[in-house]
Length: 283
Ligand SMILES: O=C(O)CCC(=O)C(=O)O
Ligand SMILES: [Fe+2]
Image (cartoon, rainbow, N blue to C red; front, side, top):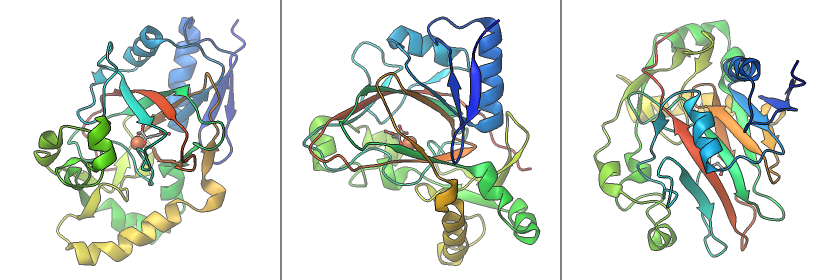
């Protein structure tokens, strides 16, 4: 019998302990898949996952989404390098967001593996979008169930914008602004029925959601701002402190995340594999 244990993490998600991701028993994989569906966010510690192990683990959950914008690992294009060099000031993911909502079929989630950590700082924060939905009143839930929202990545990954600044361009950390410019803005339901759990989740985010479909940006802003604010009360934020061997695996349809940028002058490098998702359905 496996000793593997699943322990809820403060704020959101669960930590899975006493398991070796390089040598997973079938029953352990089943339990991990169930925890991923239940929590939308799972953490592992003390792993020694090399590039092959990382790719193999990801493939057990779906097909790999090769990142269009982040620098790729020189030998393994499936692995995106999420790095902040000591001389760089901005980091990747330093605002509340969920990845890939600017795609028609947003990526399911990402497996992020710590490779080079600063001595202090560099935590990643997470919140549950199931909990964010649950905190709303019945009346607001009902209104939001009837809405869709427009999402875009063009203002982030397109030319002359966001990440495309001097330090990023110089180090090739983020590139391919042509593909950024060509992104076609999708709409998604504001309340989704989560593809794995069937639970209702709030699916908008400050980085990529532009406005409610059929509403102007000006009309949308107050309600979006209200929803964003009530999504991240301090008591609901999960702070994940990275250590060598730590791994976070989040579901983009059930969580938001925020990478702290509090380690100026120090280097931090993570390896990320993103897994394909599907079209999102209203609840
Ligand atoms: O570096 C991190 O902790 C997370 C960065 C991020 O937003 C991402 O990899 O999607
Ligand atoms: Fe991210």
